[in-house]
Structure formats: structure tokens, C-alpha cells
Image 1 (tube, rainbow, N blue to C red):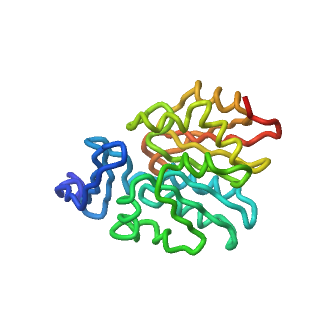
Image 2 (cartoon, rainbow, N blue to C red):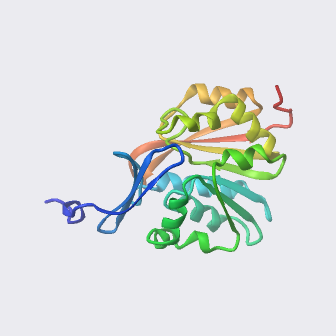
Length: 232
């Protein structure tokens, strides 16, 4: 017998256009929400265990009163997991490229992750996460990126600059000493791991489930900033 929710039709709640021209759709089926780029499901409320893990790891690496920069708001689960773990006097900057995604999180998506944008520790930065990274020097304790589908499975080629060597050097510079860069990915990418090492990070990798104890596997890179400069 089919699950009742699976028999329901998808309802389109809103549409938006990303700065790169990609068509985004927010849709709902029963109590499940999904954001799509074209016909590709970028994220679903039924599978967010790896996003939870990213936020929790970021929080664990943030010192008291520290500052975290999250790239990519999505459905709000990464932000919520981070807020649940950081100290009451921490600051969490959330950079989201698409204004509509912020609006959706203040509206129908808010209850999914207990309205994380309402937390006073949160500062919303509407725009490309590459901008605060490029403008910072030893400012952040943790940078956590959940942008697109990771370094090697991009929906938007414009995001490739974040994961290239020059982008990783900028992230290294933006971090405080002993800070950490965390990157979520839909799959593994040995070349990306090598780039992280070349620019001055000590790298570890975790495989995490997409949906609790089931579903596919996603990858989290945890790259700790070493003391040596990453300047070319």
C-alpha cells in the first residue's frame, strides 16, 4: 500500500528566480516541503540528517561568544542545529543568495526548524556567501558551506569559485587561527580534498546519512586552519 502522503499531489506554493537565472520552486505535499531548481530537488524536509550534522559540527567547533558563518539557508535545518549547539552569546551569520528563500523561511517553512531566523543571535546576509568571506580577515571561528550540491555536483556553475583553490584561500584568510571550514557535499571529491590541503587546512572527512539511519550517504569535510599562511 502506498504511503498516504505519496498519493497526494504536489502543490506549488511559490516561484522565484535566482540571480543566475535558475528557476526555483517551493512545493508542498502533505507535511513535506521541497525546494527545486528546475526539475532537480535541492532539498526536502523529509531528508535533512546530514544538514543537521553540518550545523551540529559547526556549533561544536565554535568557542563561547564565537562567530559562525553559514552559507546557504535552505529549509533552515542547518541553522537550527547550529543554534541549538552554540553558546547564548555566539553570533551566527547566515548568507543566502536568493531573497525568496529567506522570505519562505520567515513564512511557511518557519515551523519546520522552529523559526531559526527569529533567534536574536542570527544575522541574515542576503547575497552570495563569497562576499563576506572575501571581505573578512580572521573574523570567523567557523565557516560552514551548504551551497548547491557540493564541490563536484553543482547545479549552478557560478558556485564553483567557492570551491576552487582561490576561494578556499579566501576562506582560510577569513578564519581566525585554529578556525574551521566545514563543507557539505552530495558525494565524495578527492580533488577537492587535495585543494583544501594545499591551501593550508588539516582535513578530515565524515560520511553521514541523508535521512537518519537510512537514505543515501553525504559527505562532510572538516578542514581546520593551520597556523601557516595560505597566501600564494
